[in-house]
Image 1 (cartoon, rainbow, N blue to C red):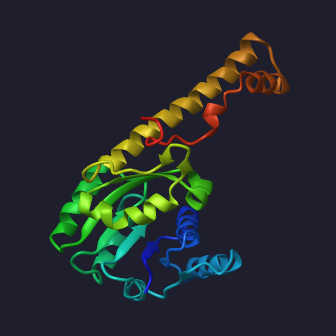
Image 2 (cartoon, helix red, strand yellow):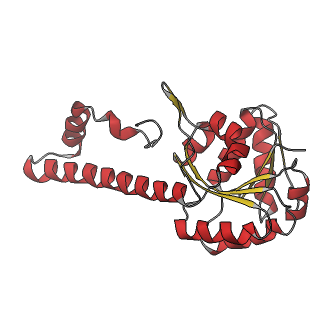
Length: 237
């Protein structure tokens, strides 16, 4: 039986599943279309026979998880999340845990937690930052939900998150919705950084009459390497 399941195998899902498997956790993966499952299983074999298995259906996926089951879903925000939760919860039991790792509106996470509570299924909304590379090698994770639910999944998240000199880039954010809210603020900071970089290039081009090579040289000279990492809210307290 697998320690954890990951359902939804686009780029982020595949890479986070491989991340968990590379840290020694047995992982079962599932997806609406079977080719993505086969691709992920083959990647796990190619990357060193990692402890990762596939599934052929939602029922098969859930049946391969150790109890209490822990399922991370990484599908498109909105209706696909609701549809995925509905399919999974049909086979999950009281005490199991679903973690939504998508970029979801925090009010939706609160609603889903309330709906699942009636079935005794726990729910966490978790922001994930770092993109494709972060998902595979260590992202920043922002989980929000009941503390006892976080404690169920924390050993996996702590090992798989980005590791820095003063700790790991994950921590308990608070009640359900808080992780999604922090990720929303994080995205705002990230987009502001991108706007700032764009405006710097615009000023250099208009005011300094720089060509592309000249602008690159000036920006490199400024050594603004702080803008090259993805923001980790747990590494700057």
